Structure formats: structure tokens, C-alpha cells
Image (tube, rainbow, N blue to C red; front, side, top):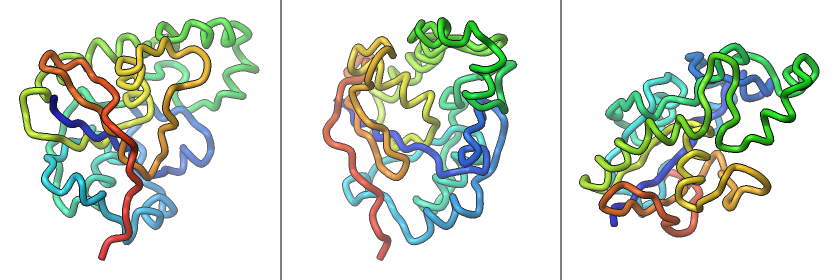
Length: 195
């Protein structure tokens, strides 16, 4: 099995405001950069290759932590929030009474003009199969992508409590079978103080 470590990008001003970023290319905030300053990846991933979503918040995170420019992978881009991009959950729930029923759809939750977690899984499957034949990889990506992979690994329908808490400043490990199917891959590791 091939190891895959997933890392969520650092914080942005939109994260602080609770806004759905989706495909909007929002950079790291000053606070997000400061939180990453002086941190490095766990020693366990020293020999891993680095991939990143092409969105600037992920690229900046990868560069700050790895000290190099990562290879860009478009399939790691965040879930498309469509017409709801830029809004907060309270705003959406107030403006769209049907929101609760949509949220109860789990993997098939879909914003108007956007993409469902199941569709995110569909675009990720070929990438995961490719990564299964490569050296171990760190992928700097987004919460929606990480949740989609976690759902595959744990057979979680995205309803109820998630099987794993996805911390922002931690690497979450998965093991890829030969066909790319992800499995739980060991305990998460926090970013470490760089020496």
C-alpha cells in the first residue's frame, strides 16, 4: 500500500468569517501565515513527494512548510460551492429553508450550480489510483476534498459524526490500495516546530 498524507491549507480571512470559499482563490490571511511560521512537516514525511491544489491558499501552505514549490494537481481543488460560494451557513440556512433537507443528503448534498461530495470522490478516484503507483505523497488540499477521501476510507456516508477529526495543522494519513481505494493509514501527526 502507498502512503498518502493529507494536509489542509492554512487559514484565510474567509475561514475566519465562516464563508464558503469553494473555487474562489482566496490567499492565506496574515494570521494564517503567522500560524504556519516556524512550523515544518513531521519527520515521518521527509521523503514524501508534495502535491498541492492549484488554489493559492494551498500552494502558499505547501511552500511555507516544504520550502519548495509543489507539483500542482487540479483534481485536489476544493468542492465547488456554486451559487452559495462566499456565503456563511447561517446566511444559507436563513435564506434557503430547504437547506436542512439538502444537508441531510450526506454524500449527495449539492449547492445550486456546485458539486456534491460524491462528485468530488468521482474526480478524485483516478488521482488516487495514480498515486497508488507512486512514492508516498503529501497532498495539500481543502476540507471538502479531505472529507470526501475520509468518507471513502471509512465508508462514511457523510451523515452523523465523522469518523476522524480533521485538524488544520496536522497531517492525516491514508493507505492507498493498488486500485487507489483509500484506507485508514495510521494516527494523524501534528506539524512540528521547525529547527
